[in-house]
Amino acid sequence: MIINHPHLGPRDAQEFVYLGDASLMDRPDWQDENAADNFHDYLYLRDNPDGEHRELWYHEQGDRSWLVVTRNTLTHEITRVELARDVAIAMRRRK
Amino acid sequence: MGYSGWKVIWQGLTGNTGWKPAWREPDPKPSYDVIIVGAGGHGLAAAYYLAKEFGITNVAVIEKGWLGSGNIGRNTTIIRSNYLLPGNEPFYEFSMKLWEGLEQDFNYNAMVSQRGILNLCHSDPQRDAFNRRGNSMRLAGADAVLLDADGVREMCPFLDFDNARFPIKGGILQPRGGTVRHDAVAWGYARGADSQGVDIIQNCEVTGFVMESGVCMGVETNRGTIRAKKVGVAVAGSSGRVMAKAGMRLPIESHVLQAFVTEGLKPVLPGVITFGAGHFYVSQSDKGGLVFGGDIDGYNTYAQRGNLPVVEDVCEGGMAIMPMIGRTRLLRSWGGIMDMSMDGSPFIDKTHIDGLYFNGGWCYGGFKATPASGFCFAHLLAKDEPHPTATKYRLDRFRRGAMIDEKGVGAQPNLH
Image (cartoon, rainbow over all chains, first blue to last red; front, side, top):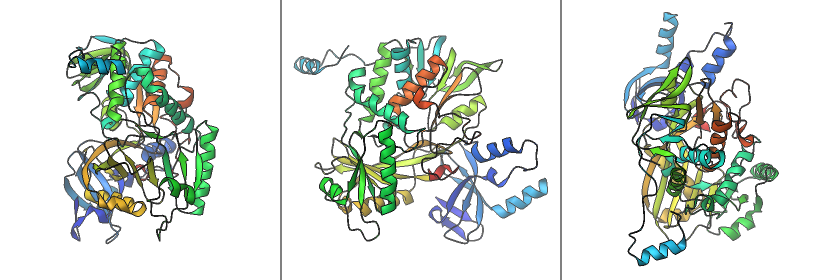
């Protein structure tokens, strides 16, 4: 798989480390009254879809940036690559 | 029709005209006592034991593709019971005991071959850890022998003992481990279940679950609605997408594991050998090919194929312990989809939906578990309580802090 890095261009997926579903960026509020349940779901449950999947990759052998990669889990086709930082900032603005 | 050596000889002399299909191809009935989704090893074994041990024969096994088209036909055929943790070891030892009597039990040649499994260790602390694991195995009634380097050298003189980075210091041997002809396991269970009245319905995809006032009453399929008092799902690899149809999210990610086979060679490997410093395991098939594998690719996927970096990594692991493997040519490689759970251990449990039962999360260790998984799932379906060896495989164990994490790496499925 080739990941088209927003800054560095096309890079072999071998240079990256995979973390998992991009929803891991969205930590639950620890002060919420249902925090224990929310953290259980956040830590242990996954959507695990077939088809389009937004996921976190870390460019360990490169510029050490975190990326949000949109990839199809049936074909391995990568349709979108964003800096996780940008996604996080946009997410905070929406809140 | 029972199989025997005499029958083979008689049929050979009479032109092999007397063989009948090993199972029927029935149309689905409108309703059953139990429906099992997934005619793979675990689903067929569950149906077999439901009929044989628990007397429930009004059972259907429904399968999207053909019988045994999933991981039962894609694995590296290894059986073993060399686990450490008390939640796991008694279960896998139960499985090993079922393997030992399996062929006589279902009257089918599954080529169970207890040629031994040898886990190599490469440092003193690793030997201490193996010592502990061996004791844990023996406490659960399994067999384990701790070997020093000379003991390993006697068995496998061809290994790279004086490797500069990972010298071989010894190993732990489970003589009762070995290999089994994987497809024959599916066929044997299918034939055994079918002969007791279980309907195996192939090319029948589950498109949804029949829910009535919060209770699962059957499944919707591309061949119509089939009702049942209980539905058991045993579709490891596809658990995420099947259980999503019941609105469930699971502590599972789907990952691809690749496996490899070389050209056929004369007998060179005495049994199964695993590398203790990287991830590599190899055995030799009865046809002569070296069958081996290593790590999963490490990203979510439902595609039954992997990528080249892992191919290279696995072959490097092989070269590190067994340089002679470099002289043989790789014939085939393939991938299978694994339910990678959050602690590396499986689930055999009721769901929060009445009438819906789940068996999955086998990571890449499901094949060896096939008989016990089927037995324990049948026990749960028949009696509504877990089999004594499978009481820890609960879906809510993360909430209770009762993980069964053999490797101790936490909730990161691609590290198990």
